[in-house]
Length: 70
Image (cartoon, rainbow, N blue to C red):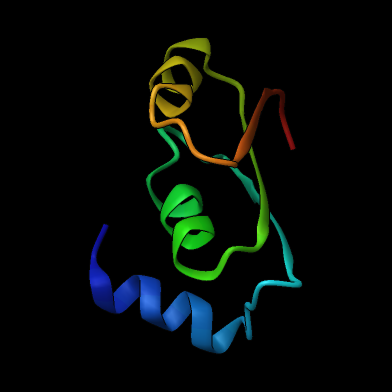
């Protein structure tokens, strides 16, 4: 995760602990997991790939990952 990109996501999205964020096409969950860890917001990741989601779920954390298409 690039720190500048994460900071920009938080600032431009005005993401705070009370926010709810869905990342469609989350892949291995790098950014959605980092966003949750940095802000404490509720997060969900959606991706069509079982292999990507298997890697994302190994990260642990509070993000909920589901298989699907947007």
